[in-house]
Image (tube, rainbow, N blue to C red; front, side):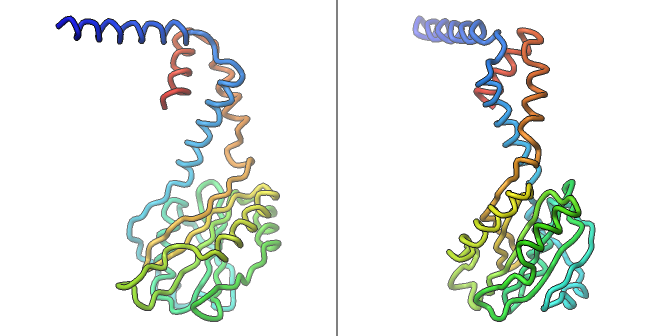
Length: 234
């Protein structure tokens, strides 16, 4: 009983000290930390993708241009990876789908087929991708390509190759220089697997989160305590 009371006393003392020490406004370093944390969470929410089953138009799937073509559409960002994976399911060659997104809506895509089932060559160059995104004010580019699997019972092809990783890193660097974000996926058997995410500073700018925090910081002791709690524990 005495031990229990001591533990309760220690706990109450720790809470009291925490509250007393965190009634002050956040300093500049703490504000920057919390702003970055909020932005990271917002980006995670922005690119929160569904893994549910999507049934694509079979007619559209059949007429996807092997030599390369733009298509217009209006699909929610969160479900588009599932749609892209469904479009690439059962393809015997490697294909690429390049999706252009703004305000969490995919409104334009490019498709083309590779020469064989070992690699896909982009029919749309990085300069064309970048200029299209900038001119039409797209926020991000999503790239999907499939890995045909002749025997899925024996092995998986869900992981990107070393070449995939190197090329996506270069694409991400080039696009971020233009203020455009990049997310890349490998698609296997109708499922999408994200492996690269390069987020531009223009998407959900850190300064917006910092400005919002600055306006609330110091408003009251209760607000200050809540901000410290969020910074340390959320």
